[in-house]
Image (cartoon, rainbow, N blue to C red):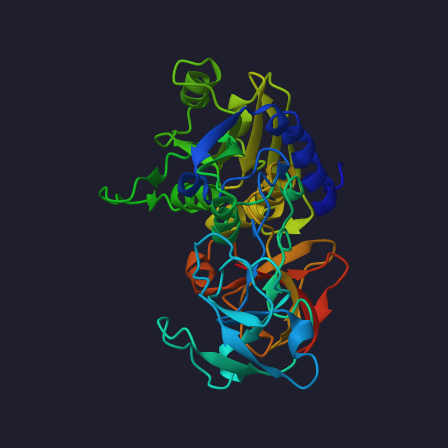
Length: 408
């Protein structure tokens, strides 16, 4: 009898399965906003420096600090330096009113904020006799040097960076209207089962609506994957094979990965198991609850993952195996945030199995279980904001015990 595979071993197996696919995906160039949520293709050297010129950090007066070093001094006010204008030259004995972001005049080495000046306001531009008293300052005060954020040629973002609003803002600041990104995986998603109906149809006796397709497609989309969704396959293996071969033999456009849900357990009529006959696919048990039954291999040369059919098992399989592999290999999605939480109540866990429970983590770090351990409890999943992990060598935990929590 084969022992269950550990969670870590199956995670590595999924990474190995996809490792030959992700690096070979071609890159594509997209407008910045279309690249939101995508991964940067290559290391990106800054095409220009940020800031591109030395400029003022404050509204104030540009000065030679040596001229006011001994307790401050009165300086004649020269023509102002507005933002966007070419640099001026600071003549001895004068100060230049300067705006935030404006170029530092030649000869100036510091800026005194306007609120520290006497009077603390810019003079009338037409008053050629205006002067201002300024307190002492030191060289470099309130000056942003050219390249102090990022220097031209320096790596602005490394390959694989997940492009969010901040990263896209940086690219815009560097003058880039477009960016080269990794092309996302194209995943074929198939729900199986005679008993499963599409939402919106009439629910006949003995039938259930398909939650898994929506749950998995939403998860894959959030992970930056292009999803191809098929109709629900019945329990005839030939039907499933026909569906899969539309996409593995290019009739409908090739895919990079096949994900099915349902039909992977040890029953006599498990459609996915039967459809994979003759293909290098393993069906095994992972020492995890829920989500123990798993399928992994290739179908017609295309990487294949078979997830169990219960909704919670389905999501846990994605979160534990596919999502981390995508994160590692293609840079997105971002990894789940992990933290420690304290159990609100005692709990028990099966020996030898890594249990993943649904929970609600509050702002004080206390986590409360949502529903029981059953893999069909999708209502409790919808109420949860976290996944709670109980290691395979732990069978009981008391209230207040610390556990690892992944925030959803």
